[in-house]
Length: 43
Image 1 (cartoon, rainbow, N blue to C red):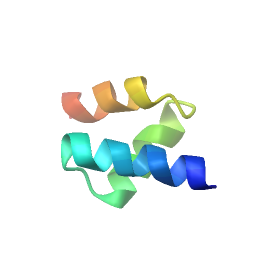
Image 2: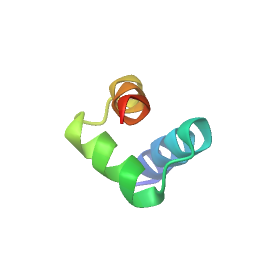
Image 3: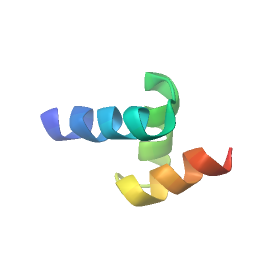
Image 4: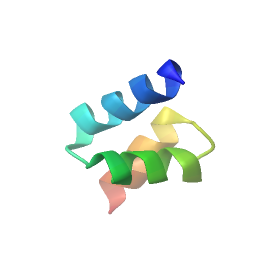
């Protein structure tokens, strides 16, 4: 669980996304932080 929260925090710091946006992007990308980051930056 802590690993997931760390990934979400990383995404939030890098993109300014909300917790919900970061979690949804991470879930949609199968836990891949780089893919989630790209997804968030494209939206």
